[in-house]
Length: 286
Image (cartoon, rainbow, N blue to C red):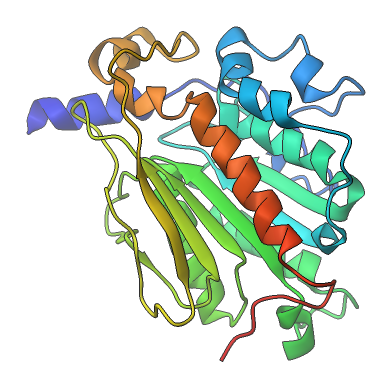
């Protein structure tokens, strides 16, 4: 158990690379630096992340983003002790891709899983359209929030959704990638303010994800799937992670670098947004 705990600790600790101010100008939530070069063509993206997003980049077309993306808020949580804006992680660049995909219609931030309160503050600010410091029931109903994360970040994504439930704020979608529960958290149970959730996991190595998430209220939350990703015969370059992680816990990072996972996530997000009939069609709290 001590060895597994040590592996878990070291495998999730990735050094900080770079942090910038978010598209909203909110200094508490940094992101990758804005660039006129699209993510899929950006030379700042390392080889492993380019490979992770290659299917997302291949499927991008000339189709217009759905009108229902207007007002979209996306929060991504990084795993382990990775810092906000750490460009070694595909989560960060996928956030930049979503920002490009939905242009000014969306606010996208990818942050450390230790910054939940900052994310709450940012969401409350963005939903407060009349900027009076108080959220009305109508402002809450307008919420279109997507949350995703890997490892501890996946655990944090569910807990963040639960905090939004306490505030009576709906969530359009949560996406969990190889959930590793943070101490004291129970991330396998999806709260009823979430309209839909999807869980990607792998079952190899000393650190692996929870195989199943369930809806607290199946009448209100659709579990899109618990998708088991396997890697026998699959080469995935994890050179963007430290030697220890690659040596002792590579499968946990393979799923994070898996192009199939990011392609499915991009398709699910587009599908959920396209299913909304118009700007006012968000999840309703009961």
